[in-house]
Image 1 (cartoon, rainbow over the protein chains, first blue to last red):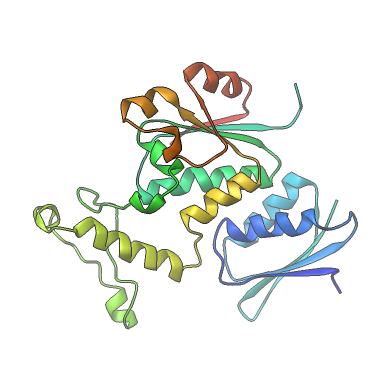
Image 2 (cartoon, rainbow over the protein chains, first blue to last red):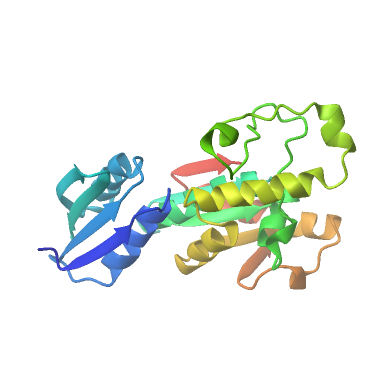
Length: 74
Length: 170
């Protein structure tokens, strides 16, 4: 279970990333955030976001048309 | 000098469609930890106005812009309305109609509005600089623009851009 969850369904670039960043800002280091999106572009974007910000992508997958990411805050 | 990455953008366009790239890139850069500045000059000043309703799209003379309807059944939505320039140029209010349709398409696709993206940039502390020369050239007053805008010229831009990792002219 993630510590927090963000529903980014229906949002398009760059909103899923911006909302993720905003949510991570409110969290403590080591906590995890689950993000659900429907934007196919967010798959590569979330990975790129994590690579550049040092946050860890714990898991990433697809479920019934939703893209689900679990990110651990650095 | 900090070791934070920096991005500098020059925004020169004053239409609704071209307002997207600077604000999308700047807000994303800020989220990625870049210190970001946008220098607004010439028509780009439109993006700093308090009232953004003047931002429009013009399909006239723009063969790259698909003209599709944002409502109706899918067969109707998929039609690309290829309207000759001579008609576009002569129908009063054509741009306003095209802009209304574009705004509807933007909303349908979950794409942020320009006022929303601009606010996200400001929240993320993106620095906005308006070119003072073009402010005067076009007869604007500082009161036409939102708060927290700095006013400067080319040298002001170079002070930051000279140390930037990424510099874009849009």
